[in-house]
Image (cartoon, rainbow, N blue to C red; front, top):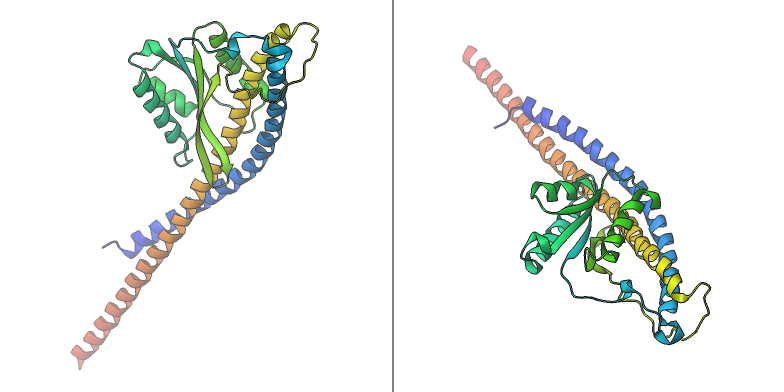
Length: 286
């Protein structure tokens, strides 16, 4: 049985840990508020841009064509995987990495059939340790990233498809639902075959031509979707870390209560033993 000194030391140590987890919970909560605002604002922008792209694609009798809008035989698949730079966020990173690993195992027989574009140190470390093909990566992003922070990576991902180095591109990340819920998201980014052109009946005249407008607009739109997914994933990361730290704080409180109960019992036992020794000694002197 642990001594009173050992129990007291564990209580003090757990209290120090509780202070850290509580502070991290509060920091993550503050970051989450900013991340939510950024993600929501950018979603409104990408929704409007999607309408514009869909309108151009559906206009002029559907005669406007572009390689990014058309499927082709798949010889190689790209996976853009968004993880965090740090842990202490519950299953945030593990869920994404496990899902991508399952997709690769089910769909591909060799490393020549896929490549990985990874965001975050946790994902990069995972793939490097397993010697899996990583064609591009970005780490050390700020908690509130700007478009410039990921512009090169997003352009690289789109260029891989445009240059036919890959024939399809999937994004896998955690979608922010609420402060306590994150949803694993696996979405096909390229080709852009999910544009809703129904109801887009207006015809416009473009200067330059609609084909030239799409040539410039579609890569920007795809890059914007990647940035939007990153903002969404950052909000989910802060929420996951806030929840994980809250759970850790609650567990620390529960452990402290149990340790203090054990300490009080040990202290009462020691006092009872001392009283018994005193009584026994007094009886021996009679």
